[in-house]
Structures are given as C-alpha cells and as structure tokens.
Amino acid sequence: MNIEMKKIPIYIILCIYLIIVLFPMVWLLYSSFKTTQEIYANTWNLPRVFHLDNFVRAWTNSHVGQYFFNSVTVTSISLVLSILIASMAAYILARFEFKGNRLILYIFLSGMMIPVQLALVPLVFLAESLGIRNLIGLCLVYVAFSLPFSVFVLTGFFKTLPSELSDAASIDGCSEFGVFWRIMLPLAKPGLVTVAIFNFLGFWNEYLFALLFLSNEKQYTVPLGLANLMMVMEYKADWGALFAGLVIVMIPTLIVYICLQDRLTKGITAGALKG
Image 1 (cartoon, one colour):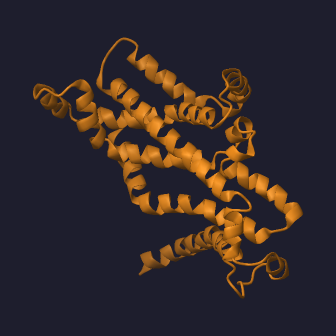
Image 2 (cartoon, one colour):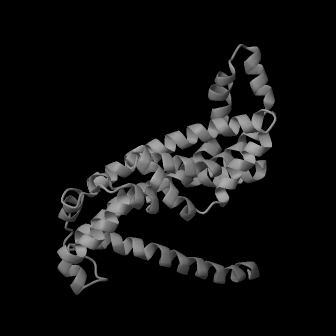
Image 3 (cartoon, one colour):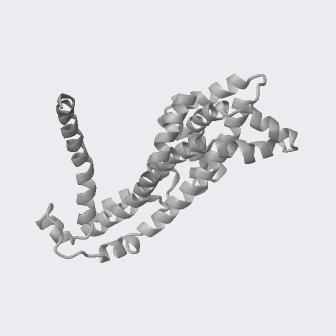
C-alpha cells in the first residue's frame, strides 16, 4: 500500500505530461474541421459542423498534395539508399578484419560530430556546380548525413551475429554476397527497423537542406511547403485549410510511430545489450 502511495505523484506527473503532449494535437485535429471565422470567434471550442472541405482545399488549392508526394518520394529514395549502403558498409566493418578497418569506422563516426551548419555553404556551391540542386541532390545529401548514425547502429548488430551461420552457408556454396543478403541482413532486422524509423523521421521533417536545395515551389517538400503556406495564409486567412494541411502531414509520422514503437524499443534495447 505504501509503495502504491509513493507512485501516485509519479502518475500525476505522467498524466500532466500526457495532457501537455496530447492537447495541442487534439486541438489541431478538431480545429482542422472549423472555418476561419469559428477559429477566430471560438479558438478552443469544438466545431459546430465538421467542414471536410478544409482538407480538399488544403490538398488541391494549397498544393499540400504535391508537397506530400515530393516528401514521400524523397524520403523513400533516401531511406532505401541509406539503409542499403549503411548495411553493406556496417557488415564489412563488423565481420571482416583488414588493414584500416578501425580507421574507416572512426571516419564514419566522426561524421556524427560535424555540425550540419558547417556544410551548408560548400554543399550548395557543389550542388550548383554539378547541376543537382533539386530533389535528386537533396536525396544524396540526406543519405550522406544519415550514414554515420546508420553505420554506427548496424555495426553493433552485425558484430554479434554468430559466425557459424555464415560459415555453414559458405560451405553450402553460398557466395559472400549471398551470405550477407540471405542470412545476415534478415538477422539484423531489429537494427534495420531502428535505423529506418530514425531516418524516416529525420528525412520527413527536415527543413534546412530543403530550403537551400529547392527553389522551385513544385519541388517543395512538406516542411518547406507548410512554411510557405503559413506565410501565404497571413494574407488569404484560410486557417482551416492550414490546420487541415498540418493534420495531413502529421498522419504518416503518427502511423509509423504507432505501428513500429514496439520494434523501435526492442531494437534500441537489443542494440544496447549487444553492444
């Protein structure tokens, strides 16, 4: 009984924190169904009528649909490339001993200590000179900056996989690439999921690189498009459509987190135990 009483303050604090986190999301959700007049007149009240046309205007007139498609494209390409390259690099660094092995790993890890702001100006000039200051260049930048963390996490997973499995596969005639693709990569699934979730959230919500690399509004990603939309709304005053756009953008992040939160927790825990 005394132990339960001691936990009551903790529960109260957690409930308060839950309310602080959830209320802005709930308010944003029901505000997306209100008209601009209702938002100004009764900011905190529930809508009298649910205006679904806000989402239609946000998706078409405000070009949120185009921004959404651009973000899906950039995030998907960057995610596939980053996981593929990082997993191959981590596998070699973890499973093979050769001269310079540790040095290459330290070079990867040193990338985590470089502030992004230091690379902005050189990257923009480089992309401009190569003619890739567009969605393709943005994907390459995302992949490059995600590699240090991805290699760091996946190296720990590949180091702990039993070598007997790869030896048995090699004896059965499996090539080195076959061992990696068919045996080791599926076994490293917890690490792959962990890396994929963190990279997805980083790519989907990234703003600074997108601002510098994308000058054509048709190529805007979601964060850049919403920032532009918010400035436009200061003159058009269609806040219902803006809130609807925010809800549309927020849905993929919530779906990924809700569906994969258990795997994320298990992946981080497994990585900590295996390291």
